[in-house]
Image (tube, rainbow, N blue to C red; front, top):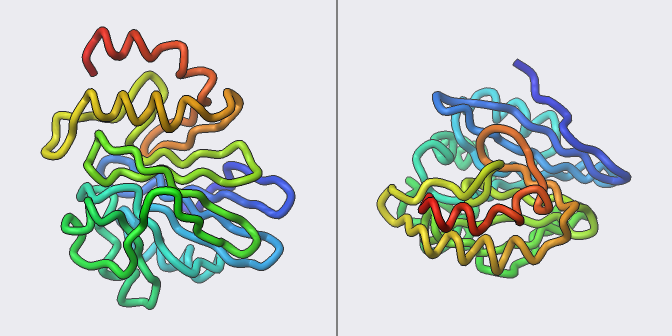
Length: 203
C-alpha cells in the first residue's frame, strides 16, 4: 500500500503510511522547496519505510517515544544510514540510536522547523513535535481524539500525562491539527473542553 498525502501547504507536504500489527501512523514531513524530509516513528515494515525514505528525501528519523510498536524498523533504517533521534529518558528502550532530543529543540527539515515538546506521561520521554508556522502537531501517543494515551504500561503515569497535555499542548491555538501515533486526527480546540472529563474518569 502506498503512502497517503494527508496535508499540504506552501512549502510543506505531510505523508502518512499505516504499518504493523497495531496500525501505527508513520509520518514523513517534507519541505517541498528543498526536497528534504524527516520520518517520525520508524514503527515497522522497514522495507516500505526505506522505499518511502528514498522516494521522499528523508534525511533523519525522530521518535515520539520508545515503545516497541514505534521502533521496530529503527535498526534497518540506521543500517541504511539514517540518523535516529530519541529523548534521553526513552533511549534505553531502543536497540540503538544516534541523537538525543531535548525539550524545545528545533529540528530543521529543509526550510521547515519542527519544535520539540517534552510531554511525559505515556512514557517518561514522550515527545511531541510542533511544525512552526503551520497548525500541525505530531502528538505520538500523548494525545488522541477522546483523551490521553494509555498510562498503564511501565513508565506511564496518568497525572503526568494530564499535566503534559494541559500545560504543554492545550496552550496551542485551538485550530492546531493533532496527528497522533495511531488512528484519526483531531484538533486542540476539539479536545481541550474535555480535560476535566478525562481527569474524572481516570484514563
